View (cartoon, rainbow over the protein chains, first blue to last red):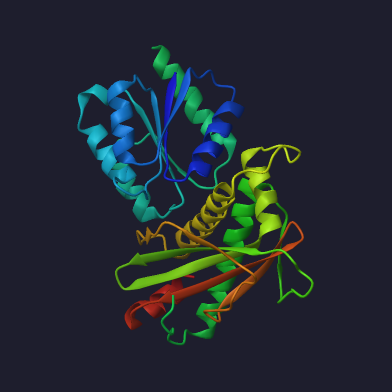
Length: 126
Length: 173
């Protein structure tokens, strides 16, 4: 399973990467992008199964990235997860229209991410 | 915010202070495995560490404001180690990594606070601006002090909103 982490904070990407490793879910490779545009380029060139993305980012936001992904059949099986500081109902309602598997508010517990990755790993094997 | 703020109702101010303290506790305990307590103005005399101040601005239509978290550099370093899993006996991380960490701390505090205060708004948050200062300057006059892992942390906050929204926001809190 290949995972793409999208966040403009390098510290947050490192933290999420660390949490992913702590889950013990088998991961082939973890890719990183600092914004939605970089993420799209990586999605074009790599076979990614799980996308973990922030919302508030420069250049291209996570919402715009998810809209582009949702509109392209190549990524119809991609598991999409939002990891954001904004946990408001209004933001979650917006995310519901973006084909997102789940919405994690920072700070989140490693157990929640483990469950998401376990599901995604099972789906990737199908 | 550098512009002067209009007076806010005392209940609103107290409620915001409580919500911010809760946000700091949530972030520090969950992401940084730190112990947190609320406190009054601590005695800063004798503290020789510099401070890192990370400011995040937020905005949604008529409601805008800022949150600035000020941490002594030694605490920032400790939180960095907890967050990243760095072994403290290894070489110190580059300075900009610690700055980035403090920015993310403020970002999470601001997001946790706003999500708790008003669940119907979609706030836009600015990227954190981080600076190093000899002491946290009291710019807004609205400040909460917390103790994180036995070190003082100051949280300065400002909220500016149109009069019609003020009462609604106070009721939400």
